[in-house]
Structure formats: structure tokens, C-alpha cells
Image (cartoon, rainbow over all chains, first blue to last red; front, side, top):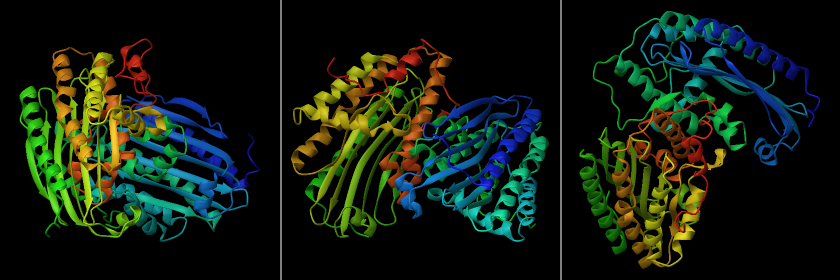
Length: 299
Length: 299
């Protein structure tokens, strides 16, 4: 199957995520000292992707930096849900998740995506959020400050809108708690596409400076069995979120996406304990308070 | 809040699951040498339950044998989905799951439930399924033979219907594989309530003889690191099923059930590895073939 004549904007996004994947993997390989493996895959109905995986690295126990670009005829059902007629579509995106071995280093997630239809409609989406396991609040502030700069350099005031949307989206609703300490989240952006393109580039370009300084600061710190146990419990919550609520994951699984790429976001190991409560006065108990919406960039 | 005047049948089911919980826990405590802990809980809108948990036992790394009985006014949304008017309802059930430490002993699940409305309508449901990690096919045959006797003693031919429904229900659809080797599954049974009551009692009464002989046969067997690794991967698949497809789990989480009781079914520990493939010619590779519908009681 051949792709319809996609827009120049699509080509720009595709080129951007392709070079971003390379840039990020190169930087992470330098930090970790371990190489990513690479799987190129094709989608029967049109398109494919490049899945890059790191496993059992010195720092990263498991991580994925994936790009994909798929196209074809929009299924009737999807068209109905968007209230448009079925037609050619193309979608591309980059998804990143890193699960460090050390509970002192947070898990991070980044996503950038673009979707367009042959009739000219298009949407941008994306976001990034941090899931720490240790109450190093200075790291949370650093992360949010970079995101604030990154969003507000495109349109002043954007950060606070997307920060709020992230707090809402990355919430484990049945537990009334976030999976981490948030970040930014945006979806269905259309209209000013020049700015939307600027935004996803700004978010993508900020990834390394939002995360690598935290990794470098914490990578040689010791941690206790309690720290590790808490991380494994929280990774279980991460699985709860991804399998019950994450729209991208569920969409991927239920529409015949490549399972191994979609589920590469799951942590390498997780624990599920009945009625887990951290010890009174422990850092873990303190950490639990931070899985609720808080202001991090303005203090 | 007080419960409406439930039927005699409701009282019978409630008494049955209460005594079954005691009977099963006593037997499991004897086999394992470890006691269950007990949490009695109340539901704000009416009713409550008794959650019995075993953790870090000699055999069972984690297990739950839970009963609950809830009542109140059926929410408008639920009434609509059943195409009836909102009214008083009462529901009770027993849910059991056991995750042994040894990969030579299968995980088991059992559920029995009864739901009735003030206007007299009622439904029975339930089932049991086995999730082994080692290709001891004689154990799978034993399990299914007990279920066959148990179902067919109520109505000849029932087993093959419920066996097929189980193969379909306990399937991880995105992977096109079952979570284990099946068992029996039935839902929305109404009509001949004498027989339906007999059925759930027959299934409940068969639990110990379907499972304990397998536990006793395998509990002292050694296992390798490969065996354990495979179990942890398959436990990850168990989580995938429970959080994405299991109707009871999702209903419980999304309608404000008691989270810790609902999620007590999750395995104590699980692994998620990118693109896992067992070694060629290994017992693990053989085991993968059995996560597809097969005839176990008739060979």
C-alpha cells in the first residue's frame, strides 16, 4: 500500500522525530554506557516503525525510545468517533520511557504525536511526565522549570494549562493519586499549526536537559532495600495506570498495534502487595504526598 | 442503610459462601502451615465483606479468599445497561486466587456470585481456571476431570459448554493466547434456580479436590531459575488480563469497590521483558502451546 500525498508538515514532523530518536539514544548510550538494540517493523495495513530498546544497562534497567509512522484508510469506527467521513490518514509519533534500576532516579516518559487526514484536518498531541520514588523535591522543581521554559517560550502561559492537564490525565482514578509528579500533557491541538509544530519541537528538544542532570546527580547514590521495595510497589501502580487508563496503550492494543512496542513501556519488574503502607515517618511516606497535584515550577 | 427483604435463595448463597470461605481457608492453612490474616470491611452504600489474605507462606507467596455481600439502590446507569428500572439490589460472592511461590505449582482462581433485584429477577455466575507455568499435562487433566464431574453431576453436558466459555473469556485478546489452561466459566444464569444453586455449590465443593492434590504433588519439587523467570513473565500476562479484560476487576475499580480487595488478585511480583521468547526446545517453549484451547477432560 502506498501513502497518500501527506502534507509538508507531516514530513517535517517525521523528520524531526527520526532525528530526535537518534539524538536521544546517542545521549542515553553515552550516559549509560550500554547500546540500544533496534527492531524495524512493518504494519500490514501501511507504515511501520523503529523500536529501540535498552535492557539491563548500568543505569537503565529497561527503556524504549520508539518511533512509528502509520497510514491507511481510517477505520469506519474511528471515523465515526471523530465525526468525520472515513478517508486516508497518516500518523506518526515518538514514545519514550526509561525505567532506571535505582529508586533514586525517576522513571520518565515522553510522547510526541501528529495525526492528519487527507482532507487537511490535523492534530498534535504529546507530553512528558516524571515518576520519582524518592522525595528529592529539588529534582521535581528542576524538571518542571525546564518544562515551563519550554512551553512558555512558544506561548506565554501555556505551561500552566498543560501542567494542569497532565495532573488530571496521569491520575490513577480508582486510587485518587497520580502515577508520579506530573509534567505536561496536551492533545487534539489544531489551529495554529506553526506554533503547534514549534511546541512539540520545544518539548522534544528539552527532554535531555529536563532529565539527564537528574540522572547524573543521583546515579552514584546508594539506596536501601526499603527504597527499592517502594519503587517496585510504585512500578506496580505504573502498570495499573498504563493498562487501565492510558489511551495510547489501550488504543494500540485494541487496534492491532505491535504488542511488544506498545507494551515496552511496562516496568521490567513490579510488586503487588496487599494493603501496602509505608512506615510512619519514612521517606516513602513523605513521597506519597507528592503523588498529588502540586506547584513545582513557581517555588 | 438496611437491606431490602432478600429472597431465601440469597440467604442460602450467603450462608454457603461464608462456610466455604472458612472451609477453604482452614484447608489451605493446613497445607501451607501459615495463617490467613482477616480484614472485615464495610461499604458506605450498604453491605461489606471479609477479605482473607495469605502472604509469604511456605507454599503460597500471595493469596486471597474473599467474600462480600453488597446491597442498595441499583445505580441508574447499571439499571439502563440491564434494561430494567432502578430498584433495590443485593449481590454476594466469593473470589479466590492463589499465587504459589514455586513455578511448578499453578496459580488458581475461583469465583462464585449471585445477584438479585427486589422485583424477583436474579442471576448466578462463576467459574474457576488454572494457570500453570510448567507442562505437567497430567495436572491439567486432573483439574479438568474434576470440573467435568462437578458440572455434569448437575446437568449432563454442562461441562463442555462452560469449558468453551472459559477458553473464550480468559483470553488475552491482544496476544491471542489464554492466561492459563482454562477451566469453566458461566454468567447471567437464570431460570432453573434450583439447578443453578446446585451448580455453584458443586463448583465450590470441588475446589479443594481439583487443586490440593496438584499442590501436594509438586510442593517439594525443585525448580530452576529459568522456571522461575518464566513464571514471572506469565504473571505479567496475568496482570495484563486482569487489568485490561477482567470484567469483575474493572467493575470493582470503576464503581468504587474496595481497591485492596479487588486488586488482591494481582501476583506478588511480575516481570515485563521486551519481546520475550523461551529457548528453543525448552519446557517453557512447550508450555506456550498449552495456552490455547485444548481438550483436557476427554483424553
